[in-house]
Structure formats: C-alpha cells, structure tokens
Amino acid sequence: MGFITATADRLTIRNFTEAAGLFRTLGASGFRRFSTYRQATVAATITNTMFGFVRTYVMLAVAGSAVAVGGQAAGYDAAQLVTYVWAGQGLIGVVAMWGWTELADRIRSGDVVTDLLRPVHPVLGYLLPDLGRAAYALLTRFVVPIVVGALAFDMYLPQRAATYPMFAVSVLLAVLVCFAGRFLVNAAGYWLLDTRGVLMAWAVCAGVLGGLYFPIRFLPEWAATAVYLGTPFPSLLQIPLDVLVERDPPAGQLGLLGLQALWAGLLFTACVLVQRRAERRLVVQGG
Amino acid sequence: MAEGAAASTAAIYRRLVAAQVRSQASYRASFVLDLLSNVVFLGADLLTVLVVFHRVPVLAGFSLTDTLLVFGLSSLGFSLADLAVGNIDRMQRHVRTGLLDAVLIRPLGVLWQLLVLDVGVRRLGRVCSGVVVLAVAVRLAEVPVTPANLLLLVVTPLAGAVFFSAVFVATATVAFWWVDSGELSAALTYGGRDFTSYPMTVYGGWFRHLLAFGLGFGFVAYYPALILLDRPDPLGAPSWLGWCSPVLAAVAAALAALVWRTGVRHYRSTGS
View 1: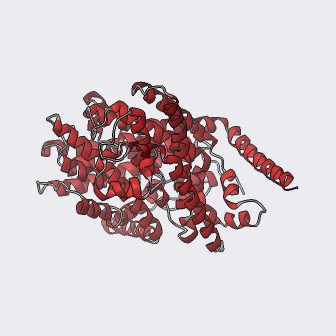
View 2 (view 1 turned 135 degrees about the vertical axis):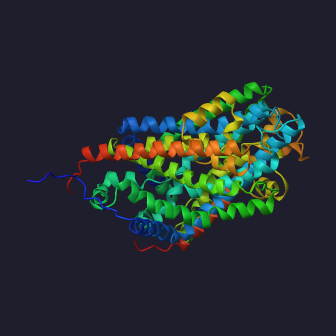
View 3 (view 1 turned 45 degrees about the vertical axis):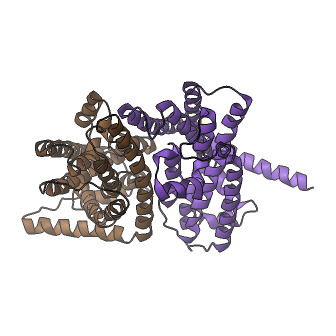
C-alpha cells in the first residue's frame, strides 16, 4: 500500500520555457474569460465613473478649503487629488477589490476537490488566471476612468520619468496583495460554514483602509502610520496612487514599494500554509 | 368580496415575510454578523465625513455639524429604502436563473413577490444607526424645535426613502433588457447616496445641475437641511424647495412604476 494523499502529483517544472508556458496558458485563460463579460465590464466602468465624479468634487472642495486656510490637504494639491481619485476608480477593477467569491463557492459546493486533482498548486492555479483578468481590466476598466477624468478635470501628471515604471511595479504588487488577501478570506470557507461575514469585513477594510474613500494620510499621523505598517490594505490602492501622484520623494516611493513587496511575501506565505492545513482537513461529502 | 380578497392577499404576503424572517434568524451567528456589518458600513461613510473635516474646518461653505445633518437625512432615507426594496438589485440573477418566469405565473404582483423573496431584515441595523446619526446631527446643529421643523424631520427621510426606492426599482429594471448589467444600478443608488451626503455647494457645473435638479437628488437632503439650519442657499435657490421632496418622491415613484411595467411587458425569458 502506497501513501495516499488528497492531492495530485504536482507538475515538475524543469526549465524556464515550461514555466513560461504555464503562465501563458493559465494567464490567457483568465484574460479570455473576462473579455467575454463585456456587458459587466461596461456597467462596472460606468459605475466607477459616477463615483469618480462625486469623489473628485468632494476632494476638490477639501483642497479648496485647505488652500483657503493656507495649506495643503495632507500634502496633496488639487490636481494630485484629482489623479488620485480617477486612477483609484480605475484600479478598483484591476486589483478586483470586492466580489470574488469563486473559491468560497467552490469550497461550499465541493467543487474545490477538482482543484486538488490538477497538477498545479491551487494558489498558483488561481493566481495565474487572476493575473490575466487584471491585464484585461488594465486595458478596459483602468483606461476609461483616466480618460474621463482627464477630459473633465485638471489632472496631475507625474513629473519624474522614474515614477512610471515604479507605478507599474506597484500596480503588479497591488494585484498580488489583493489576490492573496481575497484567497485567504475565501479560504476561511474551509473552516466556516458561512463566509459572508468575513467577506463583508474584507470589503469594508479594503474600502476604508485601502484609501478608496479617503487618502489614508488624511488620518492623524499616528493612525496613518499604524494602518500602513500594521495592515496590508494600503497596498491595494493607496500605495500605487501615492507613487503615481508623487506624494513622496523617490526614496519614499521606493520605501512604499518595499512595504508592498513585504506584504505580498507575507500574504502568499500565509496562502500556502493555509492551503496545506485546509487540504488536511477537507472532507468532501459525497453526492 | 373584494375586501376579502385583499385581506387574504395581505395575509399571504405576511406569511411570506414571516417565513423569510424566521429562516434568516435561524442562522443566528450569521444573522448577528450581518446586522453588525451593516452598522459598520454606515460607520465607514460617517468616518469619511469625519476624516475630511479633520483636515479642513469648512467644506464648500458648510461646517461639520451642518454637513452631518445633510448626511443624516440622506443616510436615513437611503437605509429605509434599502430595507424595503434593496434586494431588488438581485434582479439580474432572477432573470438569468429563470426565477422570474416562476414569479410571473403566480397570481400575485411581480414586484411585491420579488421584494418578499429576500427580506433584508439585517438592514435594520443600518436604519437604527441612521436614526442615531440624524438625532445626533440635529442636536449638534442646534436645530430649533418648532412644529414645522419636526414635521420636516419626519417627512424628509420618508420622502427620501420613497425616492431612493424608486431609483432602486427603476435601475433594477435595466436587467430586463441587459441581463449582465452588473453593478450598473449602484451608480445611481449608492452613487446617489454618496452624492446626497454632502452639501450641493461641493459639486460644480453640469454635474451638479444634472444630479441635483435633472435627477432630483438635491431634494433628498440638501434643501430640507437648509430650512432646518435656517440659512439661505449659497447657490441662490428659494428656501421653499426644501418642502418639495414629497412631491418629487411621488413623481419618482410614478416614473419608476412606469419603467417597471414597461420592463415586465418587454420581458423575454433567457431560456435557462
């Protein structure tokens, strides 16, 4: 009798070509899948645009009042806040802040067992299509709010060439952190019968502490520091947006990227550990 | 005879609602968590207002207490609407899964059936916190206690509730034509709530005209709040506008009913 495990043998990847092939195939599948949801993409973009207008006007009023009392709103000027809001509305779709319940649904229905039979680690098996999805969102849901915002308002353009590649890296890290966070929240379904509460908590924290409702630096400094260092949420929107609007000098931007990378590493380690524990306790009821 | 039929229809709805409440309350932990998270969501919006005022003393000519009054009126109106008809945003799923076909062949009103299919008892949490926020705002803004003001404080959230309900129903109707309309309705429901949470002086140009007057969102909280605060509109609108919200709510409800009926008449099953 051999040793029986719950999972299939994992694919051994021998060289770079094989790894690239795996990335391409699974990534393309995510891209293709989401490019068929055309109505939903249009609808989501319209909604992001509406919120973009409301939040821009509120932020412009804040900037206006701050100038009237002779200062800046937490170090942002009006044009920076405009860019902050519209790029933020675009990034919601890229990182997919809310609404991903696929893993939790599959755990509840038992379909998750087929993920374990695939020759790819489940974390990677979900991550790669998600990167494809993010690439599609970058071409659609990110571009439209930026264009609308640029047409309707005076936007801040980065002054330093180095900001653009740093923003690109920051967005990639944001997608990774957000994916890992969503994966962990969904994986709570291995232990909880009803994951709605956990998912709701994620949605609130991502919105409030992620910098969507207001820039985290609007908070008193001690609170902002605690949120940056103590939670992964600023990595979702706040940090990419801070990098984009050059809120900090280059050294500060690099520091923020480092913080994001740290959170990405921590959360992915947690994902792998949680997945290992979950595979040990998963019991799929027959049916 | 007709009276007896009406009474029995009401009894059916009562039983449907009661069954829903029982089934939701039976998952006790989940139910409590749902109630709490709805309170937290309102807290998140409130926190946004407070954080903004942490940075600036005045926002577009309005102080924190004035803005809180606008916010309170808007969020109570919205949460009442959300409690009553908020679950209509599942319309797309009803169309896609074919549940609507089943609903259509039953001898009860289509809209009412959909509403009692999933009563959002958990949203009571949001209504309660809305009442508290409004009460605190009235106290902080030192609104004079007169019969007219008290009447306005009752009428405005109710009219706001009817108005937001109309927006919920009208935007959900999109699903009849456009099955995969995703979060489109959120643009006007949640977007409308965010819009009405701040004084209209915050917004500028065509955007303000379109939403405040074109779609009527200005009447939900801002104009009534001006009467309660006893201050003229910095944008020059006459103060009696604050009493117009019930009229506007009635018009919105009539339009929503029209849109809904047109939608039901044009409904073609997805075949699934």
